[in-house]
Amino acid sequence: MSGALLLLFLLLPVAAASGWWLARRDPGPKARSTPGADPDFFRGINYLLDEQPDKAIDVFLKLAAVDGETVETHLALGSLFRRRGEADRAIRIHQNLIARDNLSAEQRGYALFELGQDYMRAGLLDRAEILFQELAEIGLQRERALRGLLDIYQQERDWGQCLEVAERLKPFSERPLAAEIAQYQCELAEEARRRADPDAARRALARAQDVDPHCVRAAIIEGQMALADGDREAALALFLRVADQGARYVPEVLPGLMQALEELGRTDLIAVLAGLAAREPSGPVVLALSEAQLQESGPAAAKATLTGYLARNVDLAALERLLDLQARAAALGAEAAYRAGVVHGVVRHLLTRQPVYQCDHCGFSARALHWQCPSCKRWGTVQPVQPERIPGDEVLRERRLA
Image 1 (cartoon, helix red, strand yellow):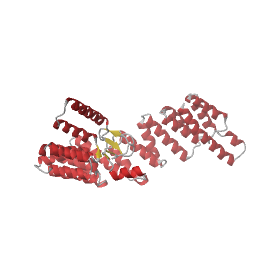
Image 2 (tube, one colour):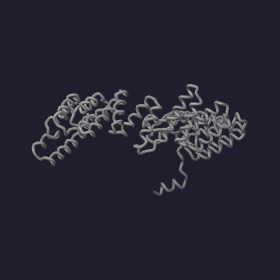
Image 3 (cartoon, rainbow, N blue to C red):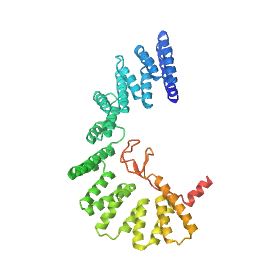
């Protein structure tokens, strides 16, 4: 019933506005033929409230056939059916609207775009693609049509077509497309790597960095390729560049960075990790640092690092590791050991429920990295979750005073 009520609230203002406008044009008989005054209009509303949408559609389509002033009503009705997941009904309304010969060019363009959206919702991507291509060619709803094409090609993972459409979209887009174009090039690089074509991958990565010099993903892929090729110096330099370009992504290159240092025979692993941890608080980096300290200096140094980090940051992974080190070192009685085990188990359980990555735009959370957010479809917004900082005494004092 909530969907029907929403339709009622949407359509009644449209009808009222249409009636007011026509009354100003001609206060005579024509004003009485507006959809808001026509008994059939309210009969259609009653069908909606009675959860009989097909009968309601028949009524509204009949109104559209005799009254040229109901275009906005039917566009709104079709759009609302689509948002409710009833794409077949939305398609029926918009197809009927497009078949009318008394639409203006602007109204026809809007109706065609809405029909394309219906097709996308129904999974008919080929039909939606044809409509969006037509709109882009004739210059109606061009930006929205191009973005619709971009959405289709991203779903189909046709990155070459994405690049072509992005170039066509540039003159009309209000926001820069460099970051998206760089991501498409990175996708092409990943495909080239899978088919064992490193030259094509490097060309795509070079184009990505030409378009967006701060593309962290390009540096990560290039570093992984260098490490796989045995060029450890280049790999290390690229992984350290990630710390400069996007410090939050350091955990993504941490295993490769540590491998490069080890294979180069470097003895400054602890210093490198400490520098990275000082630049950007990160649980994985601190855990790696504490593990290196444990191997080189013993548990005291590792626990000191973890304790210092946890004094400033809320991080369940670091807390779980500290509890583990303390349990190993302490000679606890049976009851104390049991209590410590219960606490440790609770922390470990909470850790399994904690998201590792989160989208900065829509809040989508996941335990694996997605370069394109599955929820809001934006690129480069999903990042490793940062630990929550523990406020200092001064901040707590100010909060108490406030």
